[in-house]
Length: 639
Image (cartoon, rainbow, N blue to C red; front, top):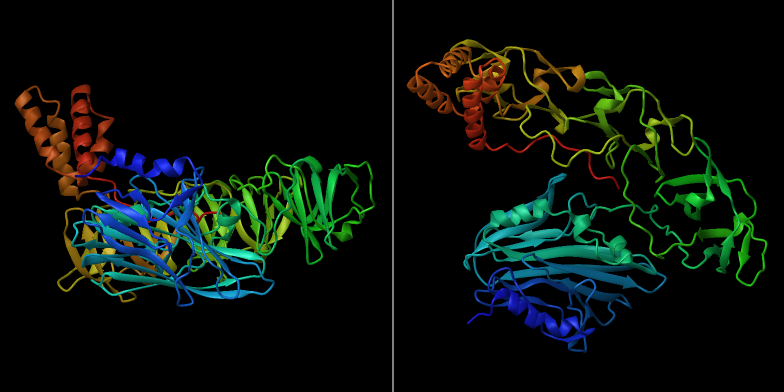
């Protein structure tokens, strides 16, 4: 007999909810009729009715399982986490495992490694998962931003439930290496982790069961990693290496100092002064001009390599040389020691929380390659970029972002319709106006990591016609002009609006397959040397035929003969004979989703009776034709 899921959860968690210490094994229900168990050594297992996992994410460090001498764990009631600490390994590295069980969601496991020594430590990590049942089929979970990077798997099992393991986040710079054989019930994730002295590093992974493998893939694809770890302590969130950076933060190796009841100043010799800073504003000489920042807007300052990094309360970061030679501070005892700015390593203004906030970086912003970031006024001049298709100029209203991908010499420009193109900013400098400066300044394009103008929805351009180009470029554009194709039997001219897709059976080869709205397909050579299409705002783009990777139009226009029949049927919707009206409506509904565009174009000119019937027809056709996924993208998340 099985307790109801809600009662079982209350029974299991009631002891933990009233105290900090719980006995192991710890239990929590899965989304099916099985239970999760955490054993003394931190092994995550399932028991009960057809448990899918024999073990999930079992941790070994340098080939050995971390050890514990107690059979209890700490339960963090605020974060709903079970926390297990282990004996030091690898010359003193401290290991902590944090398990979070949420109703109907996979288990989140965070492994934290702290190096208390002054020297860098290296640990080799392995996470092993076994299922209790054979695997019928498995699907890889890949990073949509880095298709070659595997993040985990989802596998159907003999238990009529699917297993899912996710070992990293989308866009992460460091993820474990995933190893598994098709139809094998074992998956292993390995990672060599370097931990600087006096520092922490952490990895997060998820393990769960689903009705089928597709559901597991969908869950992983929809996961918002930043939101999924938002409840973790700040120092652990910042230590995660297998997620893309979330929110703000200084460049690597720097940490903002925060005061609580008083301002705080840290000196080069290790002295720490607490009191009231008497600075009204900071004058900072940057590489692009002088900026004056009111002290009321400054969160803290860090000195590194002879420069001061000023962090504002809004999360902006400016780097340069401060002009003030001394830093006035009044201590609690009333003394005002003389402190030179050259002797200050860090200072922080008082805050309600000593934790560094996770800033929301939105609105027009500039990000420099050095790590500086700041708000800017929306550009007013066109942004020009040299592409393989020539020089293109876009009004700033049509540009969402320009960025330089990591380790890439070229830029990427993202348009507000989701189009993306690669190239190099055409001018040596880009004129931007930092809000804090109050006037424009010239920024070398080579120094810019990102210029963000507007933030777009993550999913954009659903249902739009798209042209896939070389180098993973993709633009929102329709083929309006006729396309000629030389087939084995004739040379055909096909109206561009009627083309549903153009594909290359073999990438890089001249052969192409053209599919029209009615499903006809023609194979042959594209006779045109190039295609000219219009992008957002009317910008013309001429693409050599050889650079066309593919074309996809979810809503092509039917052929002229079909349009004539549609027009004739639409006229009958206003007939005096109700049987004729019914027959015409049935005929149009049978036309399928491919005639939606034609009907929409005819809607405005129809009398009330016909317009009502067209509305019903369109509603039915759209219901039967779900919007296909978009190939267009918003710019990657700001780091």
